[in-house]
Length: 405
Image (cartoon, rainbow, N blue to C red; front, side, top):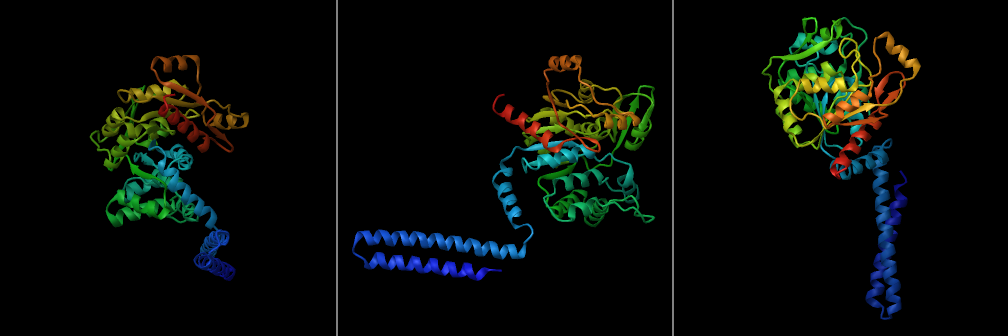
């Protein structure tokens, strides 16, 4: 461990300090006392350096693979991130977790308020079989905010690909479900999962009630269930509802919104990820009266059966139509062009880039909503919001507003 050399060095420092004090006490010549003072200072510096090296050697031996980065991260989190703005992000799906991945590098005062209207896939199966709230979107947010650099994040995201009962389930979904059954409290299950993953921030369900989405389409059909709304298209959505209508917002979510410096809606599916949260009257009313800056992040691509042919302003209009009062101060949209190879891939799924026209800009101007156009896209295998770029834009908006910009 090479610890002996540092112990020896610390002993040398102690001897030097002791000798210096002896000289100061015994010597009568001022010049010699000055030299003794320098010896004392040098001895103290050697002692401090040796003790630091001993401490680092011991800790490195216990945690050799991550000591340096761990120490730097902890110092950064304590002295920088805890002073960051209080940001509340509202939504669900991949978009929400993507944004959280970027924001956690800018502030540790993050609260994710997550939809619990999901009724498809692993979450839907657990919801039906165990009568619990769907854990999938919450799991994604927990992993996105995780500060663990070990195998826990991948473990929570691990999806079983075989087994009659397990196939299609995520380990994290099963873990949260089991905890909620053991504790009898879904919120506590999230808190305990947060500790396991050592997350930076907090995650809360929008409501603890078991809710369902209802979409009214232009042809008069009323479709119940988030998964069916995605699957059964053919006519534009004109109105969204939630049942039970009197569902209560979680108290933690409301408290976070009230204290927030910034409230971000999205990104995510407009009608099935963002809207379910805003249909809860407690959340809608609290956002309306909140002092924080309100930012809506528009999707990069349209979604078949939900937002076909929607421009940026039509996304914003849908949010305002289902809410009331001053519900957004800024709208963020992407300007980066989609490469042809990806455009063709999305055309097959009947998805196209969300356009921003002169009429859109005029509408935002009339509504006194500042439209922020920026390159916020990541275009590798899929078209996604880039976590770093999007979090930079949100922080720039906050800093500009804070300083009167």
